[in-house]
Length: 171
Image (cartoon, rainbow, N blue to C red; front, side, top):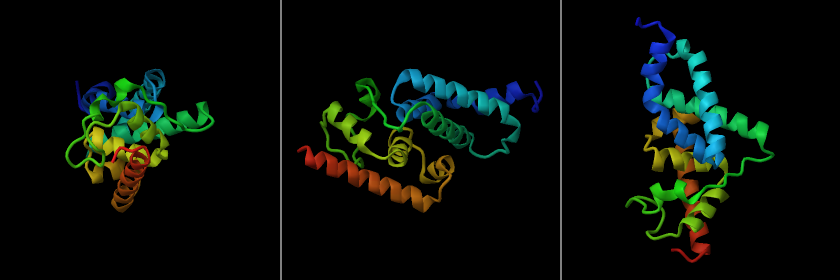
């Protein structure tokens, strides 16, 4: 296969990041069925525009496509982008890391409700940082915003989560 073969490029650039693409789609859409549709549409778009990839961070490039696809899909298919997450989706964050703004032992239902209350741009930032482990620079690339905006969104998201949990008696 030569370097300009679109299938070879897709396999090299997109395929290694499919799990992350699906995870982001699932967190933004709130369920597996919609996430599958979004991830599939994002892969079709990535394949169509693979020739436009100019190098750099292929993960951030693909996740930006997933993000844009998700928001377009949600706008078209839902009256508002409210996410309903299932307990299985929260398994990764039920026992938060030391630097996490969440206290240990928070009930999955409470955490789900707290995350659902976040505006989509804050939820997206938390998912990309805390679940997918992206650096601030990568999140900025995915979201198409300056790093300062990423830092602000993460700070506000963490504060909103802490406030919600405090109101629910989980401080």
